Length: 97
Image 1 (tube, rainbow, N blue to C red):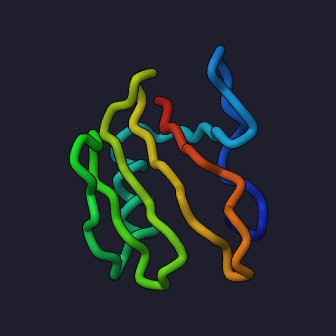
Image 2: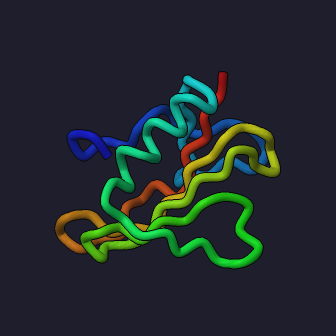
């Protein structure tokens, strides 16, 4: 949420909700952002998760990265709190080409 604004644009498609954001850049950009968001975190990937899940070093949640999702594009899953302890309203960031 750079500057308090959700990243990208509101998701499109039949399963899109207000918590889904779309960003251009594909897999390379998804991997770059995932590394940036999870720097210093610990791998806590649960069995059955189709990617990597990292516990944030601040203890404010977890961020996951799936190279492919059910709908296709690479996806970052967000389960985190902001600096004020409020849930970040973005749940998924899909990286479309």
